[in-house]
Amino acid sequence: MSGTNACQTKYPKEWENSKIKSKNQTVSDDGTQSFFWRAHTFTVLIIMIVVLVYECLVEQQVQDQSYNIKRGLIACASFFVLFGVTQTPDGPFIRPHPAFWRLILCLSVLYEIALIYILFQSVDDARQLLTHLDANLGKPLPEKDYGGSCKIYDPDNLESPFHNFWDKMDGFVPTHFFGWWLKTLILRDYWLCNVMSIGFELLEYSLQHQLPNFSECWWDHWILDFLVCNGLGIYLGMKTCEYFEMKPYNWRGLWNIPTFKGKIKRIVTQFSPYSWVSYEWRPTSSLKRWLFMIVLIVLFFMAELATFYLKFILWIPPPHFLCLGRLIFMWLVGAVAMRESFEYLDNTLCKKMGTQTWVCIAIIMTELLICLKFDWETVTKPFPPEVAFWWYIFLSALVTWTIGQFLIRPYFWPQEVGEVEKKKE
Image 1 (cartoon, rainbow, N blue to C red):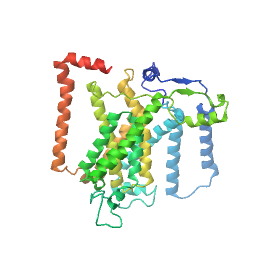
Image 2: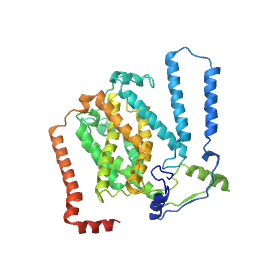
Image 3: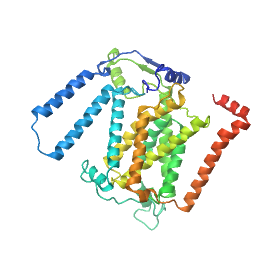
Image 4: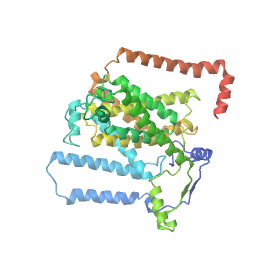
């Protein structure tokens, strides 16, 4: 995955090439520019004008205010997307096509605009707004409790003694597995993935007094979720990262490949990365990186928790296409944001936050504000005393370790710190 990053002006490829060379990765490109890689800005403009002329002068007018409002909003959004796809600069990824990632950026901006609009409504009006997408929405949901009896084997139920286990085997199991496989592809670090995996299970423990959906059996938390689904997903994700890191990348134009089989293979590989940049976060190497990682993990948890709180507050059933669609969309947004964030942290030439990162943070914060405004009572329910106690211990230890590692230790033992940094380099 490669491209031109907005934060690199003078040497747009220098940092990326250095990261690739450090892993002895081979990337070659014959430079072929086919029809699909041209801008086509004038063609898109003509097509858009023709469509608008047809809608205005040819199609029969409909005297329905609601219908016309919907069509007008769709037309405005379509214009914004066409403008963004053809006019905005490329992001860090160019596969399968730079226009695809420009489309994701434009859709993320539209999503943020929609969130801001919802933020200024009442909770009832927000729920009713969603009925324009699906008439079956806007109805209270029965929240499923995954807790209850935690017996894996129930001898009292002769017909299905393992019913407690099979009840937990729903759509969330493959979602957990594939979700963490995809998350690992954008985080690209065993340590970071496992910290987030453990942390989210602890958050579910801590917040089950707010959302019954978080109430799960111990074996559901640590065996089914953490070890099996999350663990296998992270393992497979890291193996996929290792494969992309080690494979050679030899790009040729489609019409420069003589065999039919070779052309088919080239079309398939168009949906794979152009090159691969490994993320070496090194969180303990400096205070800047440590604080950056803490902020990154907090934002990640906020985005994850918003999935559950939004569907609970806005009455969206878990199997609904809006839930799955948001997860996939936020993964695409997060992939670009994570790449931009790592370059912003690691590249000394990068002095500007990436565009997609900026929009992603705005989305996460707006979703948080929607949850706070629409269901303040639920979101602000105080932690049980035992939960609050352990969080107090954890935060105190985190602050103490941070001060000791980055402020006290370098002051009293500067030579030792310097030797450790040289070994890491």
